[in-house]
Amino acid sequence: MRYVSTRGEAPELGFEEVLLTGLAEDGGLYVPKTLPRFSREDLEAMAGLSYPALAHRILLPFVEEAFDSAELQTLIHDTYAPFRHRAVAPLVQLDHDQWVLELFHGPTLAFKDFALQLLGRLLDAVLKRRGEKVVIMGATSGDTGSAAIAGCQRCENIDIFILHPHERVSEVQRRQMTTLSGPTIHNLAIEGNFDDCQSMVKASFRSQDFLPEGRRLVAVNSINWARIMAQIVYYFYAGLALGAPHRAAAYSVPTGNFGDIFAGYLAARMGLPVAQLMIATNRNDVLHRLLSTGTYARQGLEKTLSPSMDITVSSNFERLLFDLYQRDPTAVAALMAAFEDGDISLSEQALSQARELFASCRVDDEGTAAAIADVWQQSEYLLDPHSAIGVVAAQQGARSLSVPWVTLATAHPAKFPEAIRRAEVTTEPSLPQHLADLFTRPEHFDVLPKDLGEVQKFMASHLGA
Ligand SMILES: *Cc1c(COP(=O)(O)O)cnc(C)c1O
Image (tube, rainbow, N blue to C red; front, side, top):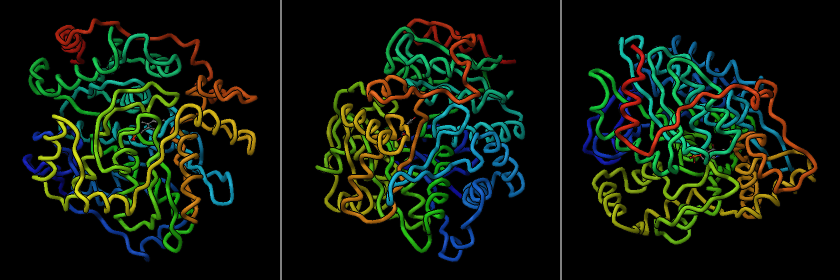
């Protein structure tokens, strides 16, 4: 499998290099040059496979040049064996046509574990083979940081630096990062906001001279192709359980950076019958406005009860744009350049093509809390605020499309106690056993000023030998 940049001016790469790269040199994102395609018969043969076995079937074509079948099988087994549900991604039924796909049984209780647990193992294998060391640098206001640390904490060849805004992330989320410790793990609490953290990371990726010879930065946000790839699997897993290839399902996806739902789009293009993909957003509704009006326009950031979806632009949307513009990298580069300076409008054709598969729905904090309360009252099932937005969107979608609806439950409710309190349900979500003592574990982090030079100096002096 070869990978190309959405902007066409960066070299074509194989899987191993894509894994070790963040943005393409030309500022674009890597996508597969061609997608594997599964026939009806292939899908019939996949029905009933366990999650790891299915993952192996679906992911092998993407990584074949870098990993042989047996090696991939071992990595996938090691990745999903520690998940705390035997099914890995169990489906729970809420109503005759409403299902929830629980993606929060990994070590940090959010769907990001599906990709980052695998990413850490893929990286470790590649680095051992090459005798190289890399540095992971990322900014987080929430779930990415802990999932990235948990995914890479045992990799000797990776030093990991996660920046978070000091005193501006929730206590559960902070503790999930800072209670993981080890010689290669560095939590940096920056005296600034999330954007300050993010721009220091971006600047460091642009100019990596502060690192010693031979080290490079690797991205763990969803611009890294391997993250998207891993997420394709659970769409197939749910679809097959609900009757694919003989019956299509629709998926409602709590969306921020468009990584998770883009994986659903790829699943559809690979042959899974998908009736609709619902972009479920909070008040940060850049994609909902785009689908409604055709204009892609930034707006100020709103703080909501679903913080992991608080974004102003969705970086992975560029990957869809590439397809909407017939994979013409010049058109994408021109659009993205124009977007640097202001709003852009999609062509009629691109917009109508997007609307064939995608729909969108926006839910505010009040609607989020109400949905948590409703579902609790009707089914004694507790949703986290992100998943609650997904369920509202799926219920809306079901009014026009009569198929099984699957909402991706992206996080465990105990990660977001504030939203649960707002919903005034008669229960308190409790952390699963393995995190029950989270609030008494010692924390490890360094507070640093909002100063790029200081942060880079810290990093350079804390690298493993
Ligand atoms: C990251 C995250 C999302 C958004 O996923 P994207 O791939 O960025 O669209 C939604 N819910 C939760 C709980 C998350 O952690």
